[in-house]
Length: 108
Length: 113
Image 1: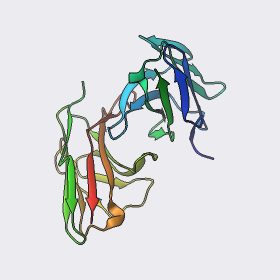
Image 2: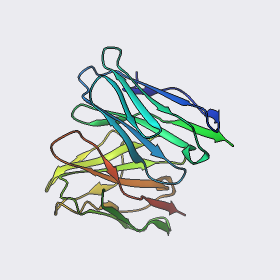
Image 3: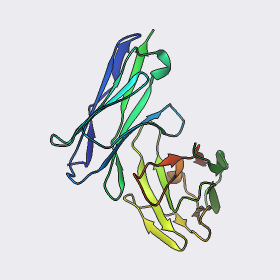
Image 4: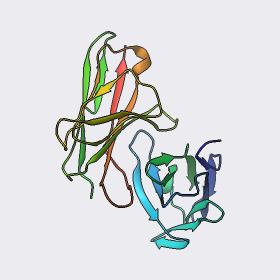
């Protein structure tokens, strides 16, 4: 079993809708959780960090963490065509482990 | 904001050539990493370093080697490039203490003919 699993894509949403991305992890001692956005041909860019249970909001992005369920999610509200990218979930205890990514396409 | 640089950004080279991909960061980060990523595929960690004179192999076996003589510099070398080495190579760094947020450089896209 992989350390970090993301919901398989691609995920297609209409402009203005909410895109919901899910991630589960296997290591219970993980302490830090991140979401990266990667445009095609570019390097990953850190967009959200979350360390404690609950929700964290930053603009149109909301990260949700549930350590008991070993689950972290990312919501993108009011999706825009510029949000079309691959989103990588990353989980850290002493090292950072990345998921395979979920590709999101926002339809205009 | 992260300041991490990679050169060259694009490299096309013939089989058998020796190449060095450069990575530098100006943030004083102790930890640095090299990832390999094929188009549309997962990131694979190939090398990492926790400080000067410290280098370790990552999860994916790689024929490349790395060195860490200075904190800010973490070059990756291929002694004899092959077409199977064609890929994107991404360098990242993070603070020693704290949350392990990694910041990535722009990447080097390598094509071996």
